[in-house]
Length: 103
Image (cartoon, rainbow, N blue to C red; front, side):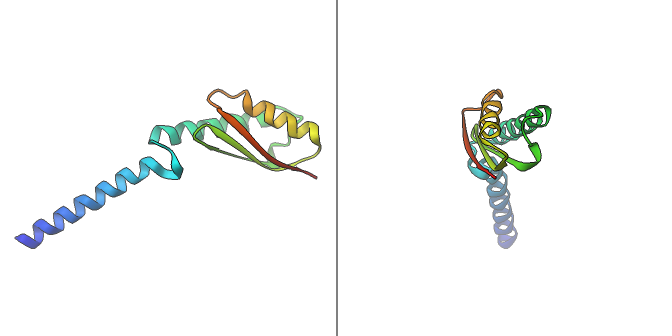
């Protein structure tokens, strides 16, 4: 009986750790922050696709706590600048880190 109780407590502790671990995934404060970051990333990518001056396929977008990070390649300085401008225009973006290389 005592070993069953110990096993149940261990299982509950494990489930609690797993459930709360999801809320701080990738450094977000909550699951809602993760969802917000995912929607910001999607919105930035969609705006890149809609804008014909930016090659959406050559730019990787990642968002963490509202900070958008752009990586990949731009054809020229204008495209690099336009990518930053587009990303800043998305609702919820706090800052943009442009790591695009000009090829």
